[in-house]
Image (cartoon, rainbow, N blue to C red):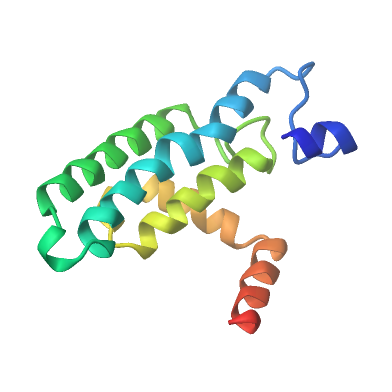
Length: 138
């Protein structure tokens, strides 16, 4: 957000003068602070801990917490994008959280509506270039 506002303007940011500015800020931090956070705790207790330290009940609690937060995000989401009826950094934030969920075994919590939202994000040429670059760097 800082770079976009300091070196913008850019359509990736929603300005304070735009009607969806509050929604944009909400989704911008929601992806990282609300949706990704419980997934990291889930991974800690389900995957990364030594086998004797794994706590499946804690992992499940955080998975369900993620699911409830994602359902809340779904109710706030715009028709096609998170805010301002255009692709913004907020979509990158929320889209990453969905992508993470789909890759770490939390698919059951991603509704059809959120899958469709993420599918739209994945169709963007910039997303496809980023995935290609990631693959070539591996």
